[in-house]
Amino acid sequence: MNFLSDQEGIISRFLNESSNWEPHLHQSREFILDCIRGKNIPVITILGSGWLLDVPLEELQKQCKKILLVDIFHPPQVLRKIRDLPHVEAIHQDVTGGMIGQAYQLVQEFRKTGRKRNIADLQSSGFTPDIAAGFVVSLNLINQLDILIVDYLKKFSIYTGEEILELRKLIQQSHLDSLPDAHSCIITDFEERVYADNKLERISPLIHVPLPEGKRKTTWEWLFDSQKTYYSGKITKFNVVAIEL
Image 1 (cartoon, rainbow, N blue to C red):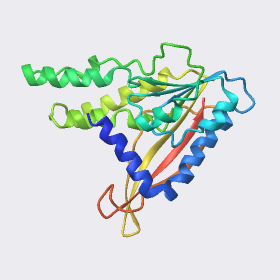
Image 2 (tube, rainbow, N blue to C red):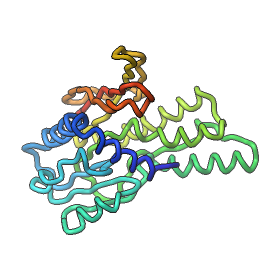
Image 3 (cartoon, rainbow, N blue to C red):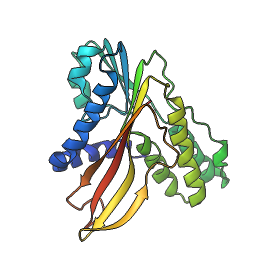
Image 4 (cartoon, one colour):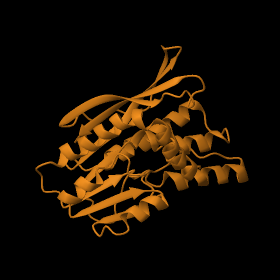
């Protein structure tokens, strides 16, 4: 499903857009620190830790006894970076709640039998940790959970647009439902804005379920692609929201 190539694409784009990405990454790191400042947080779990670009790792080590980095795949560079940090642990986990495996099985069944399963029959448990997760951070992740799965399914033209939207909602809502109340925060881009010739061409929603109001909320803009490569000849920006639950 191209998870590895997608992760490589993220770091490549960051290297080309670092000055434009840094305000967004800084805001993400600062929001996490604001959420735990002055609190007793022995364990913090980062969902979607990736390349650690938006993870305030050094500061978290000073405040938390244990840092759990959760992702479906951890880049070797990250594993080397944390190798000598005894309080930091990398956990490989599908945080879609099993939807990756189910999507793969859907395709295999369809290719063998020609029959498609009902989207409503799918089950997603969201994030289900095997150990005490403490304070949980959903880090620039929610709108990413369904993208590669949906792109994979679209290759086989099995489901209608309405069914695909139903799947997106299922994955995103299951993730939100699995976050612990009063012990978590969410950072996610929720809207894509595409500009052509310095004019706003279109706005696309990235989150398809209601987000919680939370205790505290802040928003900002992320200049994602200034070099006009994500969409050829067009600038792409994301609107981001951070919510403390």
